[in-house]
Image 1 (cartoon, rainbow, N blue to C red):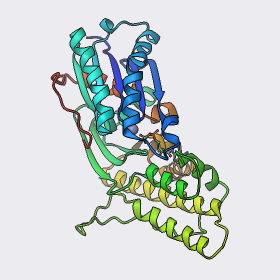
Image 2 (image 1 turned 90 degrees about the vertical axis):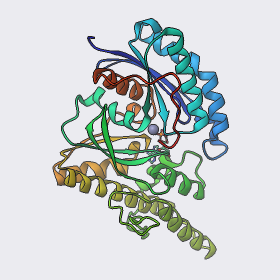
Image 3 (image 1 turned 90 degrees about the horizontal axis):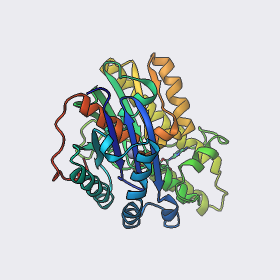
Length: 340
Ligand code: KG4
Ligand code: ZN
């Protein structure tokens, strides 16, 4: 086969997305989000997201094919996120993708969404150097991974023991009265504040068992510490210095993410760090990663934002990798795996 053409379908959370990739070329990329419908509840409501996927699935996939000037018959394979994600949301995307595969006779791949975040960077930066590490951060995930071979061998080096970094920002933002999703508001205010104003803990590295997790993250204690501090200020009748709270939180979270990523690069002898996930939009994390990358002589690959947030291109790109590697397609009865 020359360059494989893959239709990628994504429905892990609140984005219904589809894209067509040929080799390393993105031919189309369509994303419909139900984010606005969740905003008034202060977080993603799985039931609402699942219904939105059911409505958006056919129009989004049709547009991805037509934008690429293709019919379903022209693709070599279909790839779909099988997890991790919200079970009801995954069920809609996976069922739809299976129906397409069944009707067309095309092979289907149920892929890991987090590895998709890594794979998509090839569209912008090309192949992975040996021993690449990846830091994937969003409202749903915070993971450090070692990429030996993106199609067959990606190991989790560390992950969050509780909240994801984006989730932590969203929770603090809610406390400060910002609308959902609050991460971008924290970012904006953090640029105006003093990062040393409040002592925000860096998050523990010991799990409940007391075992050391040098590359794991924990952000729920960070959120609690900020919440306690803010509540104490309010109880004392003092005005909350919102910019300083945001700057201190952002500096702590960005610092711990960049530090652990760089230490892991050292341990694995990696000279390249791939970054992905919607939290990558965060300015404090970006500048922290760029600075620490320079200090540690690590090339930090931060893709353009539309490739960082959830999309179909990440699924299609990983699908291309699987086809190229000769990996056997999934059977039509493969299961979703929300915790994957
Ligand atoms: O990847 P994404 O679009 O959706 C998933 O969570 O899967 O990431 C959204 C998360 C939210 O928690 C949002 O608050 C956070 O990323 N976020 C940010 C920024 N932009 C988005 N957090 C901090 N600073 C930002 N600029
Ligand atoms: Zn994601």
